[in-house]
Image 1 (tube, helix red, strand yellow):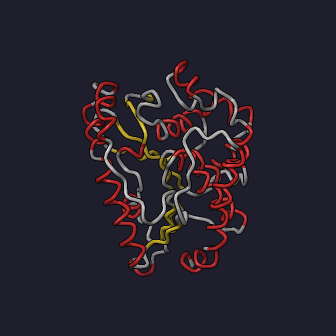
Image 2: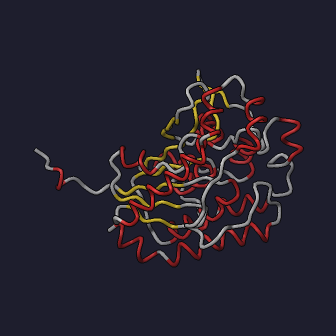
Image 3: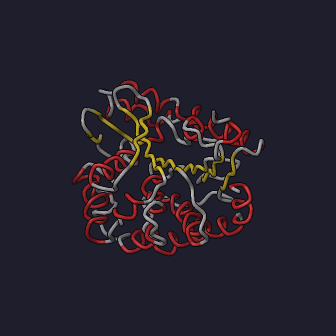
Length: 290
């Protein structure tokens, strides 16, 4: 019989989204990779899935590199892309042309690395989160990452099989409890908002949300109450942090970067704040993970 206290500790990584605030996360993760910090599993939401997947493919520097290189490419992200394709971040360009041809995503390393990696999306019909385990970094995995990052009003609903999916942050912005439910008992959580951040309601944009997503009443309700869910999750994270069950890395202050940031200097600034936070916490993270 295997006793519970003889089971190996499972080290998890939880990655919040936040569009270009995710460059903070990329900076932290690059420091982790450079210093040999590994995890048994990870879960990413939206930008946390897009940028975080590079830790499983072991591609240090890839996130900041391609963001700076393609920041002026309208097919990558622009209102022009939104008008012409329905996606602020071009679906085909970002999730297929770029990783397949322009800054190649190392699918072989991704598939061979033993770390579990989950992307969170929201089921438009039920309004519930869907946690999809990525396996090979291929076309369907990239579509799940695309779904995870498909912000309402800024992206089309993504169809995968019988599902209709949107941004995972609608239903589970900080999936620490999900990782705990999977048996991960030592979790590093990377947030993209500072400790004093409080999310407010989307009351002003709800009429537009209701018009755009009228087919999906459960998603509309999730968006209406998202601030309540998000603030409850940050409280939960703090409780776990104070209890020593989670190690949390946050930016020291608001990052001040928008979803359509095109200035490479601003991208580098946010990434460097993440690197600084990663370096400052390096010894403590190693001790926490054992």
